Image: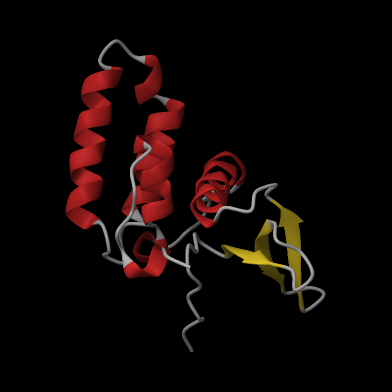
Length: 131
């Protein structure tokens, strides 16, 4: 059975708000306790929350033993950018090439557009990324 996709979702995490708060949270389902968990992203803006979520995801979630069909190209690109490309002489060229590749896959299930916001600081026009 396929899990429900949430707007702005990356992997098992998505932006959401508590009913009594205007601030967006990083949200996930904890299978051990069978509860939805939240951690504040500290912003009231949905696009900023998606960018912060992508940043957190890129730095905190490991893809060990992930099935290739479950790994999004944008996840690979963000890790490549963070771990290698942004520190080389040709970083500006790498950034342009990653932007072009992400634009080609934007809206496809292979490309998580919040990761493209983190990499390129651009707007995502995919329906999945809007509130």
